[in-house]
Image (cartoon, rainbow over all chains, first blue to last red; front, side):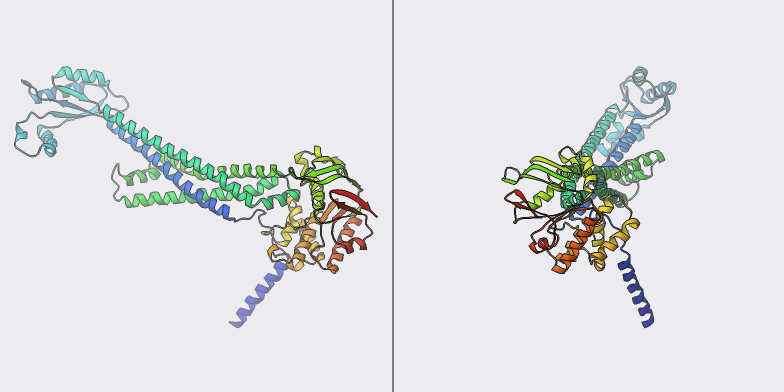
Amino acid sequence: MVAVKGVAVTAVAAKEVAAKVRPRPPGPIVPTSTAALRTMTIAMSAMCFLACLAIAGLVMVSAAASAWTSRVGSELTVQVKPSEGVDTDQAVEAVSAVLEATPGIKRHYALSRNDSVELLKPWLGAGAMLEDLPVPRLIGVVVDGQHPPDLDRLALAIEAATPGASLDSHRRWQSEMVRLASALRTVGFAILAVIAATAAALVAYASRGALEANRETIEVLYLAGARDRFIASQVERRFLKTGLSAGLIGLIGAAGALALVAGLAGERESGGIAAAVQGLMFSDFGDSSRTLALLGLVPLLTTVLCLTSARLAVRRILRTMF
Amino acid sequence: MIRLDNVGLRYGRGPEILRDVSFELAQGSFTFLTGPSGAGKSSLLRLLFLALKPTRGLISLFGRDVAVLRRREVPDMRRRIGVVFQDFRLLDHLTTFENVALPLRVQGKRFEDYRRDVEELLSWVGLSGQADAYPPVLSGGEKQRAAIARAVIGKPDLLLADEPTGNVDPALASRLMRLFVELNRFGTTVLIASHDSLLIQDSKAPVMTLAKGALTWSR
């Protein structure tokens, strides 16, 4: 044990001697860690985290909106109201015949009277009165998304086939959803714009502070004959590290938060939060790679922002010398 | 090498620190600059190492009028000038070795190429054992020697030193003076601003005296 300790001590002593004889290669000229840069890394990480979440939210809203509108748009409903002297079953058959003859319709299915009564029960109660009421009949229609029928002509043909029949194309719902989705998208972009503007102001302020703290270093370099380009590159190297690490910390944090949300949201139900978050990363290859590319832009843009800001701040300081 | 014609300097709207200062230093000359505190010695040196522009008059360095010097030409001219600052201006986050090597590093020289020169110079100024120490742990005299080593490492054509022996004992002061004399012998023009009358008396070099912003020659 003693011998081992002795060897260790000798090795340390030899290292110390070597270090004295041969100074280690020089480290960075601009201090690697200053309070201003540390604060900037933390603040920028938070900004990147928020930006990643905002982008993820935007992608989810866009995906959900297009899924809703395509689903709603691909389905139509024909309502056949009972009227005096008209056999409702015959009226449904007449409408079915019109639908059969119309190109662009994949399939259609008529709900029976009992099915229609079942649909009304939650609102009207299960009383015997329902059996006596003139309950409208519904026909579900699935259209061919690639070659949809002319809905105006179809509506006229249905109305002509039987009185009291009408076509509901869900256009109102669709337009409401599109409007809601576009409002959410606008809000998302506004949040992103606010984050970007705040981040730019923060970086400009922090880099100016960080460089003012390093003014002595910059001055000494300048007086030692360093060219502006050399000084800028030394400073930018430091800011490159700051921007990149802040961007990556924000991105990883946001990915963790999204994973947490997906986990906490429980079962993956179609249209639920978990499905939306999981779909964000693991949907079709094209979609998820586009999302990842968008999120990957965040650290990249943060780095560019930090570098640009550092360059401007260095130039500002150098302009005051000679 | 250095020529000043009717140079005047004032800071902002304050009084004129230097008034109609004119002199010429030949290449390879060794000169002292002395005068009471506040006479403008440091300001004159700052004009000479291009940290200030004169309010009026002409300054010519290495045959170039500094007033028409382009900004991108300044670093090349500065590399020909070694400066010992009164307040040392060592960078606290760099070791003594790194501080001394700084002028060579900013010129793009590689560590392997300048390592031996820096080590030799550190040994000459008695700082071999402090190569890896940081300035905050150095004594005033050690800092001064490191600052001198940094000023001379690039073998400058012109050496400007502001009170270079102010913090060292007489023995070390005369050793440092020998370093300046040695540099001068190899062709470096030396201008030393000092209060140290003994040091100036020991030397046979010409002396410029600044008083109330005006310059007079002796010797």
